[in-house]
Length: 186
Image 1 (cartoon, rainbow, N blue to C red):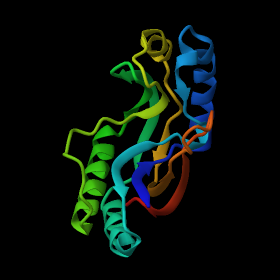
Image 2: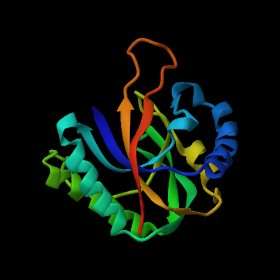
Image 3: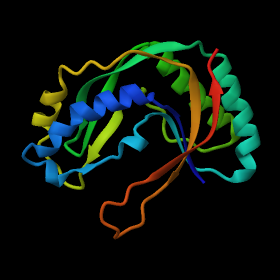
Image 4: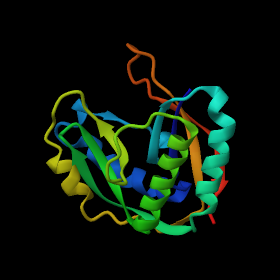
């Protein structure tokens, strides 16, 4: 199964961001973007890729330890940005050091379980809003999100999420996400 570790924003934070993003869908160039569904909005901490189900018990134990060793922290959705003209995202503000630590611990838990992880790079928290297969000028979108400051909440758990990719050729099809397991922080 295809898995990733994540922080999931609570309903009020998602709803607030949804209202801020809605007007962006009418900006010039918005039709070239594939907008992500609000039900799938999350901050990926570590992408694990395909994981053999036999590894789940050990992975769960290690992820649980990573969560319990990390204190709860405050977070809010903040501003916007882009990756290479192909992805529009909203960032995070608040307990970013704690979030980076949790990301490093989730990555280490996967590695110690025997899951081959991608090359390690500095964690940059982002919540993907839209993607494009071709380069798009995302400047108007990021400018529209510049002043966005979401409601603060306390991150209280680490989630292990299963990702089922959309069926090719089905217009509007979105990935489906399911929380496999979650552990309380602290």
